[in-house]
Length: 222
Image (tube, rainbow, N blue to C red):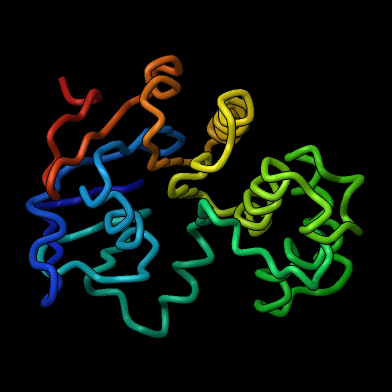
């Protein structure tokens, strides 16, 4: 599902952000991405989401080589990759329903199908009864769940999360990670960047460790 082959990413102003990254994730696999701030975690996720392109090497997602993907196919690829961020990035003046519906509205999906999918996504994250609320009326954990619902509403086969529990307490963090596990059980491939090593170790999923842009450790490699 996701394969990195000798991937490098270099920024003119910062130098090498990723150096010779190699790994492969299978369909329905869940893994954590750990490392210090600046180790390259966010950069790696941005490459998978095609928010940036690698400087060298190949990245394959569902058989597609992202390094050579034509520009016109980038929007389609991004619809196949759900992304969750630490800061939620919700529209404060829109309802929870409208926030989750936005990716579907952009693609031109019909109103009836939008409603069905949005309510199904909100139900999965336990917020179906809050669809008319605005983000300011929700707790931090609930806002993060809205961000997750928005990421999954298009039913992407790949889900990426960049420090999704960075602002949450330990109990809420575990709830969010257990929610991710439920997506894994239905075949979604998940890669989650996090600093929460205690929680990572307790959940016993595959873990990648980056250090200064290099893949220092991969617990799935034997």
